[in-house]
Structures are given as structure tokens and as C-alpha cells.
Amino acid sequence: MYTVLLPVDTAESRATAQVETAIGLPDAASSVEVELLHVFDEADRTEDPSPLQLRSGEQAYDRLREAGLSVETTARFGDPASEILAAADEADADMILLGGRKRSPLGSVLFGSVSQEVTLDSPRPVVVTGDRQEQEMPTHRCQSCGEEYYTDHDLEITSCRNCGGTKVERIADEEEPTPPA
Image 1 (cartoon, rainbow, N blue to C red):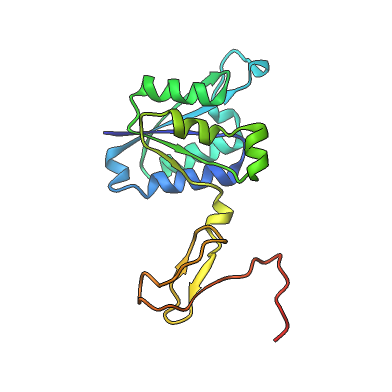
Image 2 (tube, one colour; image 1 turned 180 degrees about the vertical axis):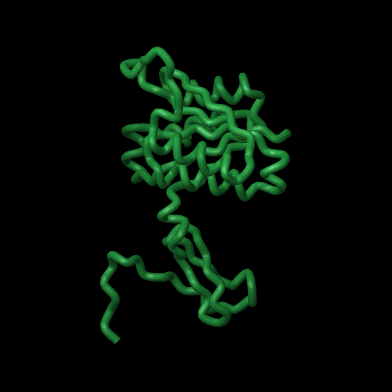
């Protein structure tokens, strides 16, 4: 069995991205066991804490079970990064599957990043999925063959992985006005 620690926060779109990544692992239904985790703040202590108390946790659990994966739930209290690392050790997880969020460089310096801390301090592989809404929007498209890329919008792609063409262009964000033709 391949054990994946999947820590969720309150963001449903990040949890969805994490879940879909877990489901997409090779032979997931028969060989992947997911440990669904939420780290509660000390002030939120309750008698029987569970990730299923969160809408994101409940949806993640339901989707994983629907896809045929084995799922266990656990809750912890304290510093999220420290508790994620401790939970990974206790579960002897083969991988930690995080749902990171975008922060500006200044925001990361000032507020830190759970994903960054876990990635740097974990002896296990860590996958950071990001946000499902961002994953569904391609950032680049090859003008020759139509191949789409889902990556950093600022990245320059010099040649297409599909056809080898050199006409890979950025796709304008929906919020950005399109220049008149």
C-alpha cells in the first residue's frame, strides 16, 4: 500500500486539487491509502475533532471514497507545518500532498508558508498542487498543434513538447483586457 498524507485546510478548491491528484496516481483505487488530515488551531479544541467538520474535508473524503480509495481521517492541534510533518512520520507516509496557495514574495517573507516549511523540512516527497481553479485554466497554447500548458503564467516556453513547434504563446488572463484587433 502507498500511503499519502493529504492535509486539508478550509479552501475547497485546494482540497479538490489535492484529491484529484491523489486519484490520478497510478493504480490509486487498489494501491493508495489516504490519510486525510486537518490541523486545528489550539483555540478550536473540541472533544472529537475531525477533518469532516470542514466542508473541504467532507468533500475530499466523499470524492476519495467515491473513487475507491481507502481513506482514514485524523485531526491534530498546533502549528500546521510541525503537525503535518509529525503526522507524516506517524503514518509512515510515502508522500505528502499539499494544496498550496499563491503568495507574493513579500507575503512569503512576512507570513511564511506552510507548504514551504513542509517541503524544506520533510524527508519524504512533497507534492504541492495549488488551487483547482487555477489548474483548470491553461496558461500557454501552441499555435501549431493546440497543445495546452498549465504552468506559471510568466514562464517562457520556447518549444512545444508535443510537436516541437516554436509558436507557444501565453494565454491572456480573463481579467486582462484583450487588445483590440
